Amino acid sequence: MSAVFLMLGGVSFVAGIERDVKEADSSGLVAGKVPGQKSPEPTYPISGYFIMASSRDTTNQKKLADIKALGGDTVITFGTSLQPATLASMPGDCLIDGKPCARVASGSLSVDRYFTFLDGSNWGDSALKCPNDRTVNNNGQTYSVLVLPNSGQGCTSSDGKYDVVVAGGGSSSAVDPSHSLANAATDLGMKFYAGLPAPVRGNELAYLPDLSYQATLAVFTERFLAYQADANDIPGLAGFYHHTEMPLTDSSVFDPILDLYTNQNRAIRRILPTREAIVSPYIDSRTANAGISLDKVKTGIRRIAQTSGGLGLNIAIQDGMGTGKGAAFSESEANSAVDPFAATIVGQGPWGAKYIAPNKDYFSAAATGISGTGAVLWANVEGMAPVTNANTCGDSRRGQTTKARLDRQLQQVATAKKIVSFMWDSYFTCKGTGTTLREQVESGASTPIVTDTTFKPSTGQVEVVGFNLEGSKVTVKWTNQKGQQLEKSVKANTPDSTYGIQKGMNPRLEKVSVNVGVTTRNASKDYTVELTNGWGKKATEFRSQLP
Image (tube, rainbow, N blue to C red; front, side, top):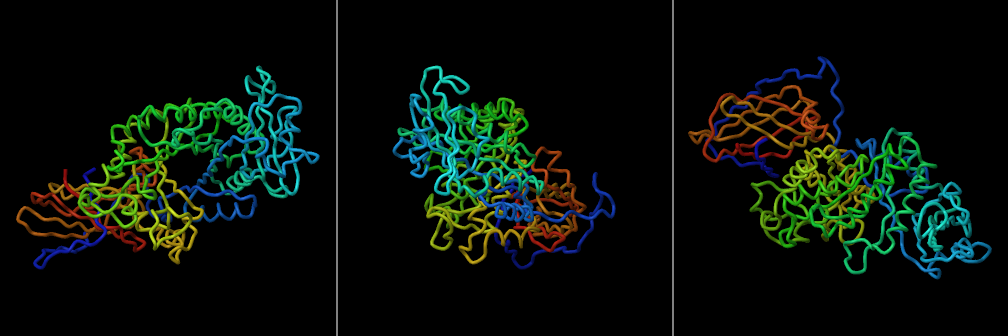
């Protein structure tokens, strides 16, 4: 495809422009389309969301139904950290006969360390695997107390020492959130990825995990997965999410995180071999932070893919638009000022000076790097924006974004086979600006999103790739060798709905073609494309350049 330049505003054409606005018809059939077949309903390209789990079935069922109505088929929850603790810091209401539950459960065993995993779950007796394990119901709360071997496998420690984990902390009358979500996903034909246990951050380097209890985390992860196998082995449970994050880089500094992915992926494959995993590394292309180069991205994603151990692994790259670490701009905008949201993070200045490259280049590099590994490239389009005084929503550093900004983000990630977004709660549901982002997406779900174009003046052929292109009219504007500014509007052919699948890109991508007639181009080689689809929605104008 040609280099693509995106412009938010319309291009101004001076008086004396030569126009041809007759609607030539270049419609035709493509493989896979049946004459008279009803066109599919338009859907927004985001097909999955990070969500907060609830301990109420009705809440989870409604949330997933709302997401499905918006075109989503996937939900993902964050995991909880396995937190080092002391006997004194254990939950005060985890008592057995009035005594601390961790002390009672361990009995006469020698305890090396204590931990908590307070995820609000309600595992019940199915979590109990060893003689000293206990379920505690006290003061309206439920806990699972697990006594894990400090060394060795099974229930007996080879060195005679044990670790005690107090997990759960959900209401005794509530359902287990992960079980509830798995059931809801099963009922609705959706996929649910549950967050995995994770270590806390290290004391010396906050961006690396605490490595002092790797063995305990490994044993607890197996117990966590064993519970999922016992209680949640139903179709709705599609897999698990690694919430320990790292940048998309080849630096060996992050090897401990890769080791964590490797170990947990092996455990998933051993205990629940039909499930998959998701990991979501982040882009950091800021020049002021010595951002990550495209070459490092190619190697970095390959290293992450190699942690799969044969497990199905989806690598959902965070696009950084909510944190200011990544940028959705085109080459023609490189000298334009960053938007007000990004400016709160990188300061005032042009896109090209503040960022190494646009997100489109990073996703293209990632697609090259992941090729042949068996892992699958996804995009995690951040559904929030850096906070300003006009978009407060959620915590103090992130605010509500707009659908127009989301559209720009989506134009950059066509090489990803699936697009998910962080996060439904509360960035898509809060009313920070009076209209929730969910409502904006719902009302604009049929908006065409153009991701790429080509133009061959020698034949007049123009191809447009994107989402929701059914029934499109395409307007092409260019300047010929005589300096005449030309414009032609043409009804596109029937979309090739198999384009994304054939190219190994997002399967929802379509391609349409028009012919504006044999022509010439001036030295600048610039041209613009406008598109209105059959639902009357207009795409953001694209300004492109011949190769």
